[in-house]
Amino acid sequence: MTSPLLDVSDLSVRFDTDDGSVHAVDRLGYTLAAGEVLGVVGESGCGKSVSALSLLGLLPPTATVTGEALFEGANVLNVSPRQLRRIRGKEISFVFQEPMTSLNPVFTVGKQISEVLRKHLELSSKQARKRTIELLKLVRIPAAERRVDEYPHQLSGGMRQRVMIAMAVACDPKILIADEPTTALDVTIQAGILDLMRDLRERLGTAIILITHNLGVVADIADRVVVMYAGRKAEEAPVRELFANPQHPYTIGLLNAIPRLGEEEGNGRERLQEIPGRVPSLSEPLDHCAFADRCPRADDLTRSSVPPLERVGTDHLVACFHPGGEWSR
Amino acid sequence: MSYVEIAPLSPAARRRRILRRRFVRRPLAVVGLVVAIAFVIVAIFAPLIAPYNYKETDFNALLARPSSHHLFGTDALGHDIFSQVVFGARASMEAGVLATLLALAVAVPIGLIAGYYRGWVDPVIARLTDALLAFPFLILAVGLAAILGPSLKNAILALGIGAVPQLIRIARGEALALREEDYVRAAVANGASDFTILRRHILPNMMSTIIVQATVTIPILIIGEATLSFLGLGVQPPATSWGVQLRAAQDYLFDAPRLAIYPGVAIVLATLSFNLFGDGLRDVLDPRTQQ
Image (cartoon, rainbow over all chains, first blue to last red; front, side, top):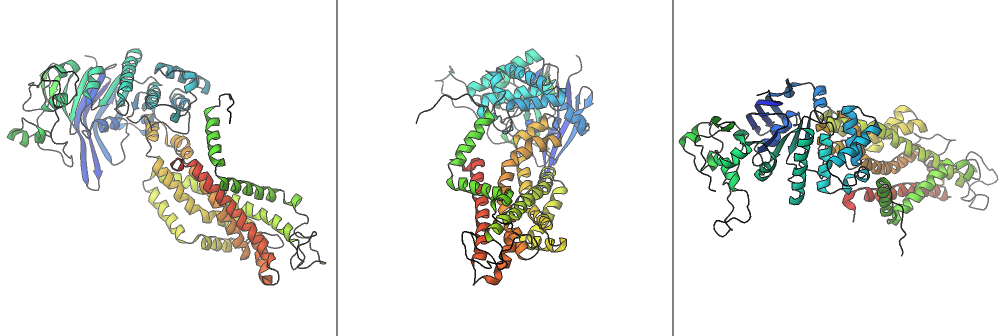
């Protein structure tokens, strides 16, 4: 196996607040190969966004980040602000959840994309404009020549997210981190955006880290999936393996919580299953399995020690004392 | 009403057109703008508009009533009051506009730095502004003018400095709010430097607030200039300003109240017009007040 494009190990993030510290991410590790799509899944507050933001130093100053994230041989958690600015948007770029507010309202979308191009690639304004129109076409914005001169408020949410994606891929980054890119959009628009991201991966060879709480989205596009729970990795597997043979009860819970249409069993109106309880507060590092309070398989062992990550198959890791696949479907 | 097919406008032009239409629907704001512009024109073209030089004395008509010779009458020294009021607009407009620009030039960068960088800079700047704000604006300006010595230039300096704390507070508040915007975070994620973010993202987005604040600061400083001149800390006779005229009128309040009324009305009209214009501008530019 060639060395991965991004190798994250032992990544921990702690927030120090007046009410004590919160351990948002705890010794997380994963790798990303060139051109690969990695899905990072979990409920709100499980540390998936925080871990991604920490890679580019985008967390507020109250955050303490430790660990290592090797990108092209350098630890991006430990580079100078200057180098970091050169990596941001050029080597690793970000697409955020909120397309409605992620564009500056006082400049045209074309200007905003050009700005990134001119900064990182030192293009002239004419070249940048030409490239901007190409990018808008690449993200399938109709009438790109006209749209380039429009202001954000003249575009719909889906269009704005396309603009954000255009901006993110403007400098041909090696990694695109998409943080819930479709969550704020209509379902029909979501499909279009996912389709676009798949297309970009194929055409540009960009590796993608896709952060989402929606396993359906992951099934659609990811090669490999990391399931996070309470700041830790609960399970990691190639996408087919995960759906066919989930091991962690949390993963199984998430899979059961996907709404499905036209189920044959019963009358097709089975109650959607939820995972009882909620993500624990992370004010101190847990000395037991974080999922214990919500887990049907919890016992004394689960409540007294932290389950280590263990290999249960080729490329399939799970952190659970009682793994197994009696998935209710 | 019929609509004519119009050539497609650029988005910027369309936005300007929408704003203009919204502004025009506010009659008071329009009146304010017209009167304010009129005062500025009078100030600039004072020598052409005034029938006499403000220094010229007519000893045949001391304390004369209004007549065709002297539209507003004359004062105790035979100065033509109309000409004096016209020339007085100069000092007022200069003080209002220049002192406001001076205050903005100082306050906006400081406020931006405090609000954007936070850290230890912010509390230091914030507490210093609070300390300055504890002095009533006029006391501060009077104190400064007294230290600097009486002249129009020093009055402008004093008024400008006096207006700085309030403007720092506004710029800082805006920067503090804008730095949390998603587009600022997106710009950071795209590798923008602090300077780029301040110049391209934060400053442009606070401009409408700053412009509105500037238009309401101008009338305050116009009154400030009149006050300083009235107290003898601003414009010095024989140069004139509305404040100087009011001071001279004091001795004749009962015999010739018009000496006080004309410059007084000029001050009221000038400040009212800028305030009405500023209020209208705020309504137009603030998206929360859009109907």
